[in-house]
Image (cartoon, rainbow, N blue to C red; front, side, top):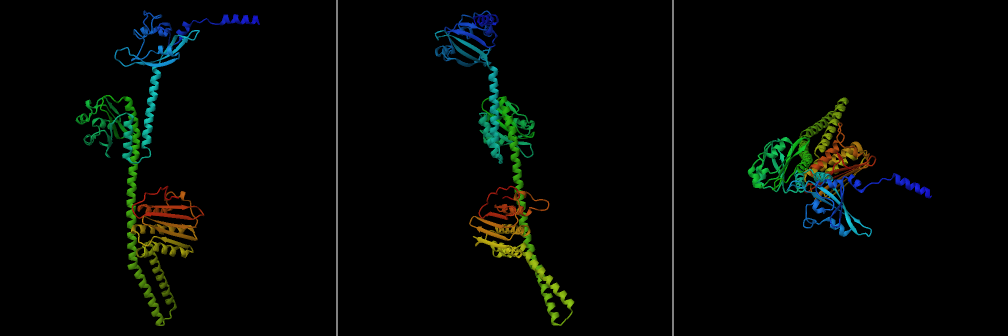
Length: 554
């Protein structure tokens, strides 16, 4: 055991290095030194020594004289020496301070991190402090860049959240402008939009600007700062707009007191739709970073602006469509009434006269004893055809404009129409009408009757139903029409448009008729489970359109 231990010890003495503390410390890139409790430098590595003049005394000198050029330790109001704090507390400390520039009066050119650690003797008393200094300028700049990018992304997210889902252009612009001013800590700004010809800019929303400035500050494309931005699609940041020759109406700019200024385009797919201006009454408030951020927001806002304009166009197109449809349906009703009137006054009368004359001719022939059987058979066939034609004319007149609708009202017209057309097919009809003692507005009566007519026509053609129930419930505010059958049913979700064969046109027309009077039409159906249609129409004011997933909903 002893021999083995001696060998091991010999080997350990032979292989172990004999480093010196100075050599190890000189290898470290950070600046390292040891200062005693009297502030005298007892140890310093090469990096620390290189930071001082070659002929300057170092070891044994006081640290504040060597490094700070002071005659006493640092103290308030500048700052309190951290060495004293570590010596008194006996706890390590870490501080970061700005490194002063070599040029007097210039801003600091970096950051230094100092870590101080107490060194103790055998009794535990602090006898010196080890100090490590590291240049952390790069790390601080990286932190600033990361923080700046975070703020940029957060700002873009706020703008996106504020404008997403909005269709109203003014709401989008107001929210966006308020958010932008908050982000860049400004109180003055506005958004200018190009006119439809894309040749002139004018303010749509603004903050902190006078009405006179907004009214008179309208620019042609290429005129002034905003006009240049709109023409080139490139942002501009100015230290003092009141001194810049590119600015339009410098008199108005000076009156407003504008100095710091940034203008960015609102672009969508490389098309400039407007310009966003942000101003300040202090020179040089906005930096290139601010311009970069606002330019990014401008691109995002341009896309939202384009979408809002598309929604506006869609709304106008929808309004035009409904207006045209309303006129078309009104013209259709007028034409139905005209045709029904002409059929009643002319065609029906002529056929009735023809039928009576044929009947008279048959009676005359029988009275005179004419026994020509072939002639009598032909006369009877002609009479039957004339009678049938007269009945068809009456049916067509009821289809075009039922007299009951004009004379007795909606409930009687729907009831008669349903029974005349369904009971003849063997379909049982049950009707329940409430609150229909008073006549409804003509537009409402015609709308509900035509919808009922369309629903009954679909039942006759497709449903193969045995039972149909019809309900009409009206009060002072609305009328609800319900029609239900126990027929074949269909998959409502598959019927999303009118196909080339015309399938779906009936349901589409019923829904549009209801919408034109501010109502809603809902259809629920399943294969083998029948169909239920519910139409709700307001009697005072207008209801908002019900949510519509296609031609039908259910």
